[in-house]
Amino acid sequence: MARRLRIGITGGIASGKSTVAGRFKELGIPVIDADQSSRWVVEKGQPGLEAVVARFGEGLLTADGELDRRALRQLIFADPRKRKDLEAILHPLIRADMERRVMQAAGPYTILEIPLLVEAGGARDRVDRILVVDADEAVQLERLMARDGESLEGARAILAAQTNRATRLKAADDVLVNAGTVPELRQAIDRLHQNYLRLAEAMPPEK
Image (cartoon, rainbow, N blue to C red; front, side, top):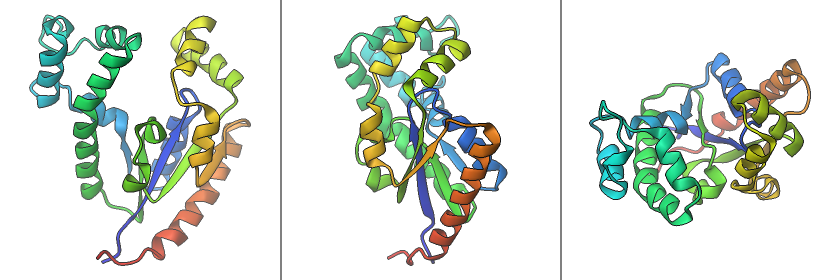
């Protein structure tokens, strides 16, 4: 049995990853979303939530016993040590949940949408190819302000906290430049899809 090809999609915030992933879904390719898994592992009753509360306190819970995500973001945003502690708790759980979803998915190949694929390290252990969705920083700032209501200063702080563009591009096997129209982006995705189908057919059997 041939092992299915895994493509990791990543890119800076507001670069257009969700648009790209949506087109792959339209093409019948399963997309496993790290953000979806990250929400799942801290839902009420999940061990991830219990571990987060044990580390950071019950002040992160709402009156209903659910995670107050806004409070958690505020807690870790300005404290690298706390952010690393949170990542140490959640990243293994998120990875395990994504692996479970990959094994349940059907299709010629699988897309893993992972915003922090390059930052987290070990990307080559998780995917066969890295697809970077790239956008100019000025475009990202504009989108962040329009989409999330961020101030210019706030948007710049968010970008500054991420891996720089050059590092992501250096890690890429494929790059989608999201600088034109949506139809142009979709055409570029369709061309990649045909290439991925060819690569998927050529995957060696599992050992």
